[in-house]
Image (tube, rainbow over all chains, first blue to last red):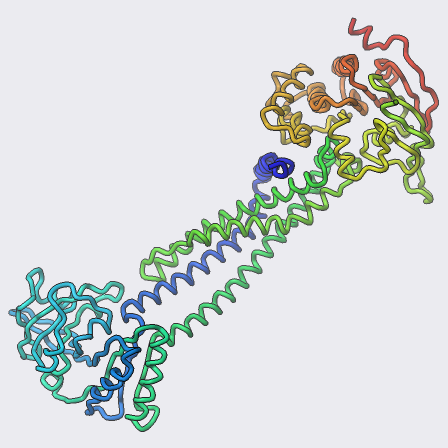
Length: 396
Length: 237
């Protein structure tokens, strides 16, 4: 408390505000460097977090820890047995498994008819593709064994075919074949109609709907990120064995991309951070410059203060606080500009996402701007404190 | 013990060079508590240099200066600031007020540097301004006041900390006669209340307000005499 009082913070701060007010134009120009620098930092960091958020959203649609497996070598082969056996072998790592065959068909209910994506999958299709049952149930393993004609509808398909009627227990026709609706999925957000215009049926209806025994595409859901990478390895080995080469198949997981993506954002952060850092240094030099001018202009004032008892530390703290205040004000404007730019970019680039800088970022940026002001203000402040009182008083 | 004691003080600018100036050329004197001393001399006589050294604003090239028994030469930069803060109040010819601050704020400044708390400091500053008759000008800035008023603010600033010594360097140099008389009477009053006043002037009439006149020429004391009846008292009576 004593030390604080002896630094005369309040007085220095009000002097700083006065001096900024008396030199509005000059103060603003001085702040400009800091404003631009911090606006750049804020926008950049927020932008990166927006990219991250969007990536997470697409992750959300796909579901996390998902491995996709596809086989190209023989379009008529059914490899579901081999894949299924492998998932049993890896049961520690695998949470769920489903074939993932898609076909497009005309679907009818009474007088309504829509074009729709039909997915042929197992009873775990919902888990593997990150769908949630809203009404009714997912079909079961016995349904698969019996090749029952049961269907689960996506939210858009349900709306198109049934409007507000309850679809559970009603029948629809896919490719002219009668299916009974047993469940409805919740709407998936962020993916648009594509994700929700869907009907899932047991994959054992493959011959009925696609006139082929081929099952060549699968989704395996692993229990964790580490498990996912392990499953990718195991599936690659299996597919290589089945294909007899290393190009007739495709094993893919977003988790692999996650790492690449993390590296890329890290690089982007570093490059952007470097640019922002340079502009902040330039801003800081601007502050140093104007503080030197201010010291020169106020030489007489410094002399007066010294003659009435100011110590060196008093003069230093006065000018440091002034530099810090200019920089902080610039920083606050910069944060506001950055937040505004983030909002605009969020609207334009991220599909109306409300993108705002986080609180820790704002506080950190404000603290950093004070630091810059003080760092670059030290040299002028120290110079002011060393002025000889007599010579300073003589200055005009 | 003398309040101020100078023994063989020299102040030499540019020593050894062609333009060497001996501003003070071996000055010795004693000033005691409660005196009203005028240092009289023409420009270039060394009187301002003498005040700067007495006021701890500058250090002598050679010689010994004791302020309250302390050898000023041994004091650090910070200790000199402390001495200026505690012992001396300055009044300058050009007032030397800070133009962005109001009268009250200007008078508060030395109190701030003495770490006096806000409410007490405000009260002390108001009292000092009242003592110079400026209670009605607390929130005026220097540019909104006459020269005489500005100098009275400067006096209030010098006495706000109640220092034992007040040094005034040509305090009436920029003022008209009426204002000059006011300022000199204020200094006389200050002295009667016990403050040691040291007045630097080139003007014999101004010097006559003091009880002792020290005449300086070319950096040496040529005359040092007491006045029987200071003019200030006559005018005040």
